[in-house]
Picture 1 (cartoon, rainbow, N blue to C red):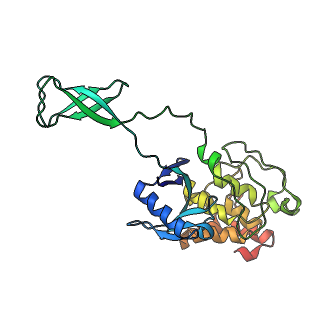
Picture 2: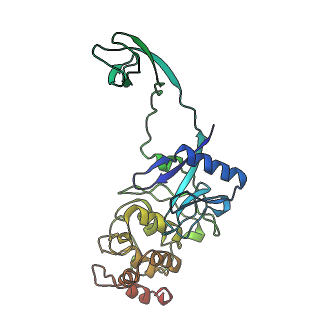
Picture 3: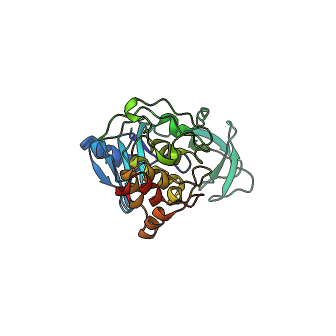
Length: 298
C-alpha cells in the first residue's frame, strides 16, 4: 500500500490529495533521502523534505513543502495513512428488453446506487449478467469547520527564538494570548500606541502580520498572506479606520525583514507605491519611518 500525500490549498482551506503515481514517487524519494528535493514531472513544482522543507516565502509546518520554482509560492504537504486498494463487489443485473451488445443501460443495484452497464457481446434481453462495481464507501464523518487549522501542526520558526503558539486568526474579533516579556509591545510605538481604532480588517495571515509587527519581524507569514489575499493586502488594504496598511505599520516599527519579504514579491512600481501610500491623514509609509527614526527601512 502506498502512503498518501496531500497539499494544503489556502484558497479554500482544505487538503487535496496527489494522484497515486505522484504519491508513490514522493514516498520512494522520502525513503531514499529524508531531506530530498524532487521535481514533479511536467510541472514547475518541487517537493522538499525535512531540513530542505523551506522556500524564500515560508518554512513548512509539516516537514514537507511544495514550491513553485518560478514564483517561490509555497504550500505545506502532509503524509497521511496508506492508500487502501479499492474494494469491488459483484452484482447481478437483468438485461432489459430491446437491449443489444455494445449498448449502455442504467441499472439500480440493491444498495440504491444507479450504475452504467455496457451490454457485453453474446448477451440476449432477459439474461442475467454479473457486473463488478466499486464497493459502497462508508458513511462520511462530520467535517470540521476549519480542517486545515485543526490538522496542521504548529512548528517554531527556524533560526529564531521559539514563539508561543498563536491562535488561528478568525475574521472579526481575534483573541491574542499574553506575550512573554521578550516579545512585549515596545514602549515607543509612534502613532500605533494605545488601543487600535478598530480591530484589524480581514483575517488569516494578514491579521497575524498586523498584530505581530508590534512584537517582531514576521517575514515567514508574508507568502501565506500573498496566497490568501494577493499583493494588494500589503499596501492597498486598510487595516484600521485610519486607513493604515501593513506597510505603514512595518515602517513605523522598523521591521526591515518583513518589508524586504513584501518587496521581493512585488514589481519595482509596486515597491515605490508601498513607500508613498497615504493613510487617512495623508501620512506615507516613509513618514512613519522618519518619525520613529527608522530610516534604515526606506
